[in-house]
Image (cartoon, rainbow, N blue to C red; front, side):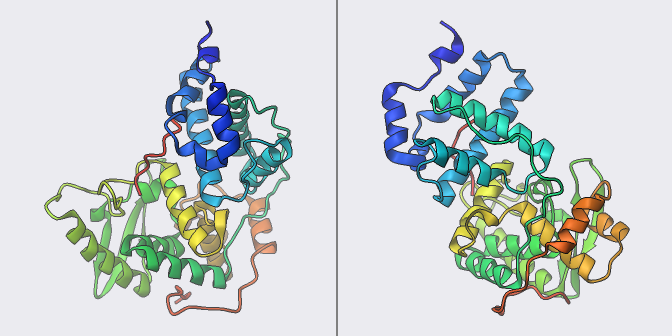
Length: 324
C-alpha cells in the first residue's frame, strides 16, 4: 500500500472535521498523518518540511480567526478562506504556501482548491492606523508584560520574524539614559538601532518581569521568552499565533502580522523624511523594491480618530503544542 494512501484520514476523522470545523484540528489526529502523506508523494525532504510548516500556519490561522468556519466542509468557503489567507503575500511566498494548502486539502479529500496561482503585483502592504496601533497596545498590555513589550518593540523598530525569535537578552542595552538593540538578520548581518525613550522604559519593565519569571534559569538567552516553557519562541507560526491572539483581542483579527507591523514602521520612516537608503538600512532590507514602496506610500492607512496613552508616538508538523 502506498504511504500516502495509508496516511489518509479515516472516514471518522473526516466526519469530525466536517462537523467540528477548524477547532477539530486541535485534536491529535492530524499531528503525523500529513507528514506521512507528503513523504508518500515523493516530495524532497526540504519540500516536505516547508509544506508541513506552511499548512500548519494556515490551520492555526483558521483556528484563531474563526472567520471561515466552513472552510473544511464547503468548496466556496474553502476557496474564500485560502484567498483571504494569501492576501498581501509576495508572489514567491504565495505560490509555495498555496501549493502546501493544495496538498493539505488533497489529504483531507476536500480538493481541488480553486484559487488563482498569480497575484496582482505590487500588492499594497497592509499597515496599521493610529487607532489600530493603540488598540493592539492596549490588548497586549492586558495580556502580559511580555506581550506589551513585544508589541511596543515591534512598533518601534519593525523587526523580522527571525530577528524577534533570535533576539538575545545581551543584545538589548537598556538604562535610564536610553536604550538600543542589536538585530541580526537571517543573512547574519547585524545592525544597531536606538530605541525610543518610551520603548526603553517598557522593555526595562519586561526585563525585570523576565528575571522574576526565569528565577534560577540564568542560562536562558532569549529576550522574549515563552510564558509556558520559558524558552525561545520556537518557530514562525508561534509568533504568528501570539500576534493573532493579540489582534483578535483588539478586534483586528488576522490583520495583525509581522508583515503589517514592519510595513507600518517602514511607512512611518518614509513619512519622517528618511531616504530609501536610510529606510533599508534601518529595516535590514537587502534591496530597494520601488513598486512596493510606491504602493506603500500611495495606499497607506488613514490614521484613526482614537488614541491611547500607550500609543508609541513618533518622538509584525501540524502540531498545536506551540510555546506562547
